[in-house]
Each structure stands twice: as C-alpha cells, then as structure tokens.
Image (cartoon, rainbow, N blue to C red):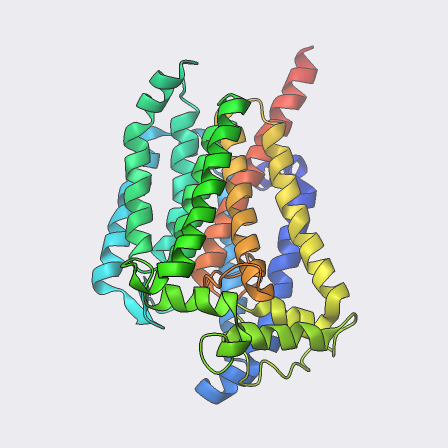
Amino acid sequence: MIQGIKNRYKLMDKYLLFAYLVMVIFSIIMVFSASSYSAMQSQGNPAYYLIRQAVHVTLSIVIMAVTASISLKKINNKKTVMAIVAMTTLLLLAVLVFGREINGAKRWIPFPIVNIQPGEIAKVVAVWYMAFILSKRETSDLSSFFGSIKKPLLIILLMAALIFFQPDTGTTVIILGAVTIMIFASGIPIKIGLGFSAAGVGILAGLMLLIRQFGDKLPLISGYRYERFQAFWDPFSLADSHGLQLVNSYYALSRGGLGGVGLGNSIQKTGYLPFPYTDFIIAIVGEELGFIGLLLVLACFSLIVLRIFLIGIHSKKAFRSLICFGIGTLLVIQSLFNIGGVVGLLPITGLTFPFLSYGGSSLMILSFAIGLVLNVSTRNNHDRQKSKAES
C-alpha cells in the first residue's frame, strides 16, 4: 500500500500539489491575521478562527489525498455519479427548510466541526455530472447532441434554481458558467460557441441596464441584490450603509501600498471592514502585505489554475479533460467575482476567494476537486509511461 502511494505521488503533477499546499497553509496564517480582532470581540479568543481553519485545512488535505488515490473508474461511474447528484439535490432542498440563516441567507446546514454548505458541494458535483454526461457524446450532429443533454441540463438548472433562492446569486452564476464552458469544450464548433458567447454578453449588458433603471421594482432583484448593485454603482454616497464594505476595501488596499503595513497590522479588520477573513480577505492581504504580497498570492493561485487547464489539455480521454476544464473554470469565475467585488469592478456577491478565505465547506469541496485533477494527472502520466514502454 505504501509503495502504491509512493508510485502515485511520483506520477502526480508536483506543481499543482505544491501550489495547492502553499495556498491552504498560507490561509491558516492569513485567516488568523484577518480574524483575530473579530474573534476576540465575538468569542473572547483571538485564535478561535485560527484553530478552526487549521482543522479545516488538515481535513481538506486528507480529502485531497484520498480523492487523488481513488480509481478514476469509480469516479466515472453512472451509479456513483447519479447517487451523488441525487444526494446533492436533496441537500439543496434540505437547506431551504432546515438550513441555518446567516446574514439573511439560508446556505448552511450546521454540524459540529463544519457548517455544510450544499451550494459549495453543488459546484463541483455539477462539473462532475456534466463531465460524465458530455464524455459519453456519440454524435457530431448538434440537434441530437443538445437533445441528449436536455435532461441533464434540467437537473443542473434545478440545482441552480435552488441555490438562487437561498439566495446565492454568485454560486448560481459559477455553476451555469462552468457548465456552459464545458459544453463548448466538448466539441461545439467555434462559430457557434462565439455566437452563444456574444449573445450571453449582450443579455448581461441588457440586464445591467434593466437593473439600473428598474431594479428596485424587479421581483428577483429587489431587496439585498439591488442594494449590492447600488453599492457597486456609487459606494461613497452609500458609505454608511450598502457601500460600507467596498469603501473600506478601497481604504485597505490604498493603505497597503506597494509593500504593505506588515502582517497583523491591518486597521480595516478592526471593525471597519465586515467579513475581513471571508469575502474580503484579499483586501486584508493587500493592506498587510501590499501590492507585492497580493501579486504573489495571485501568482500562486494562477499556477493552480494553469496546471489544471494544462492537465485537461494533455488528457487523452474526454471525461478527464472535461472535469479539468470545468474545475478550472469554476475557480476562475469564483476568483474573478471575489476580486471584482473587492476592487469595485463587479457587484459584491458574497463569494470567498478559493483556498484562502475562512470556511470549511468551501475548502473541503475545492480540495476534493484538486484531488480529482491530481488523480487525472496521475492517470495521464501512467498512460504516457505505458505507451512509451509498449512502443
């Protein structure tokens, strides 16, 4: 068994593994720095979130390692995939009924060690499910192809709708975006893909104009969603209410400058910037470690994403490629939404920064995703070695 683990490690993508470990270990340090003041105020212990994040990271690394060693045949199995999809859908229904409400949203099912967030699970399950479905494609005829994925898409849309009404717009967009990219990557002609992309951009632009003019009157946009759009458009005029987070995020980033004020020396985390260790941890990184520190963090994260896409490109089998493209895409979308919200380029969505922000459910499911990709890299290298030996 030990020899088998050693052999798998030799075939794993070392760059991806190293970058992942650097990010999650650094998250322990950064979460402690960003949360110490809040933890002292709310829990009477500045190390409260540090201890919990250390537990989350330890469990996440175990999950990643176990997933990386499972046979891909078990993962690419219809009974397994459909059972996981059914369980995830049930969890999404359960959270709406039994979920714990935090800041006006029912996204969590409470457990002793970690609050389970079904929406986080659904992100990776949707990618896994669509990779399985799309890898079975047997026709190049587009009408037959879209007909064959009609039912799976309805299941994905059901999951997305359940998440949207928690409410969690950001995760909904991530799922739909990742699935769309996977469909394009499965062999859709470039012209059609570009046409769909252009239509998507046009629809989004139209929605933005519609929200700006009539957002407070639209049933699905009014309330907290419209408030976030208002803060996005003019944060300083709403600095005492909806724009508070964004304005203080600006202050944190500007105060950090090039080299930062030093680890642990943030002022914005001391009651000025809400959620400094979750949604806005990037702002605290910028304040304490400066632009240089922020660039290093983003470089490490970019290495993770780059290796995932490269592993997908070098995969000879459709399921392996598609699951890598899907996971890479959801990481890109989530990070862009988080950073975009922090710097005011996009409305705040409440999405955390992958592998860095505090949170057990998110970190564990993303570690599972990294385990899947490392598993694919191991199989790719094994097949390559086998092919060389036979030639």
